[in-house]
Length: 290
Image 1 (cartoon, one colour):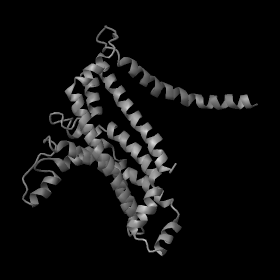
Image 2 (cartoon, rainbow, N blue to C red; image 1 turned 30 degrees about the vertical axis):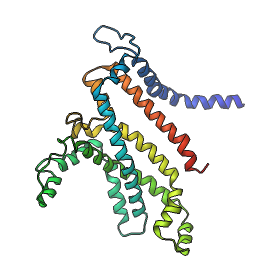
Image 3 (tube, rainbow, N blue to C red; image 1 turned 180 degrees about the vertical axis):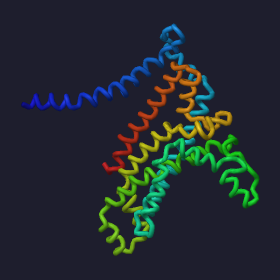
Image 4 (cartoon, rainbow, N blue to C red; image 1 turned 90 degrees about the vertical axis):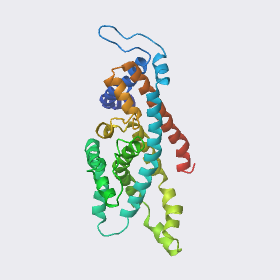
């Protein structure tokens, strides 16, 4: 009877397992194999080239520029998104007038497609006519091409990503705040603890599991977010805002070098898996005080 129950359980799981294997594990394995092969052209099949694609990647200055840009992009979006999400959650969790409207306003960018968000911000950044130009003109500041300047292009696309992500992560923090025992706040008030002391000593430690979850998602999003580049900068000017996934798209679908694109994919996935495992097995112990 026990074996029959186990067989029925595996049969129920079989459709999901087949879909997982077909659309996740097999493509990942095929990409790894193809990263050691040349790109097929015409009737010529792919040839085994070993580590040649990885050597090309090491010698590619655009790849290293994209990698450095992505590190700066991640270093900015991760703390800003988490900090802004936590601040918004703390605010709308209070009993303030219009908090339902505030929650909706903060969460609205999350439900918008990234292409739509990029078009909204394109209006802000447009030289001479954009909203930023109109505001800066009131103070007598000169016109500036925000997306066309290598010094500001990456910062502009980073700001768009933070605006899009913060509202999504706010929902997780808000749910975690509402799950805390209200007696903790009452006890802190009786002891005369300030709001900052209560947050630092009580709320923040209890929010650490949520922070770990948000942190993992922030790291993944920092290396997979690319949609807005197609509208805002297309990686320019002079690759100043090129990110790894956008460079991967150009190599694979613009230049049609699928072997090299597979090598970039393998490196990107390996880096993300390594960071995620580090967060799970190292930070998780600190989060749950083990």
